[in-house]
Image 1 (cartoon, helix red, strand yellow):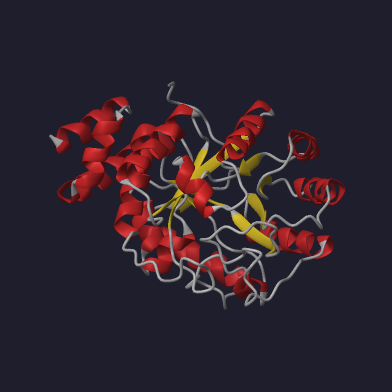
Image 2 (cartoon, helix red, strand yellow; image 1 turned 180 degrees about the horizontal axis):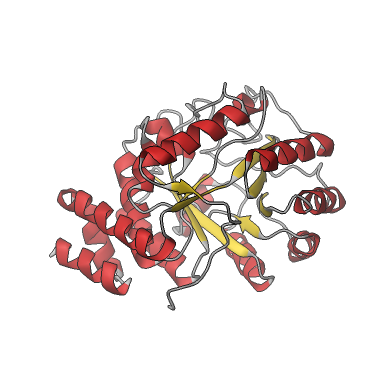
Length: 345
């Protein structure tokens, strides 16, 4: 039965909630699921891998999410902000290496005003690259201002569609507000990225199935599926999880249901498995997002423990990931990596 469901999803890109749950429960079909997802990825996305360089420009955050090492209550974290000139310098170096897409990511830090961010975006756009923002919840007017400055994409993960779980793990935050952000971004013409954390305490397979169907419902342009990794400086430090395989399964199912979406092989997967990103690229993913921040900032952007490559330079990361991608018979794209909708919902 499960194999038939995989074949159905591979052909029609549709599964209902019960079918998704049954596949999540069945570990015997994992290899077949990953093969099908990789086949669909090849059909719709080709063999190229899009590299998106992340600049983690501030680890200061006003939020207090229980699972995140950047939470404002974490007094063990050394805080930093990168000034605009240095952000631009990092972006210029990344463009020189060959990156065609730059991701600006930070905690929710009010130091960076709309004017500051607009100026940064405008300057980076002069490098002939795509600009993605991952700055958290903003107003419609702020999102509009960033779009007018040239921002192409915005990443904001829902973490979980389970409303009560979301609001228990994100004190003072509202899932309705997060959904509002996604709607605003879509209405403004952004390529919208979202995603979830797999393995959160209290998360059920039913809610993971709902997450997958939600991504399908909003036709998300990019979906980042990350394993939850407990951080010792958070209230969830003692949670025990084994979620690498489940994260891969969720990613593969998302590929089957959204065949032309951009799906990253997340860095967190490689924190759990030394070959995690290459395994993910062979199981449906088509994007890798290397860190292009320099120096101590890499260590201090400590969302979760065990982050890879914290002692590497951006140039080392560029060469390393290019070599790894070549080793699995894939090539690095020279394009901006925008989503091209091939499959009509």
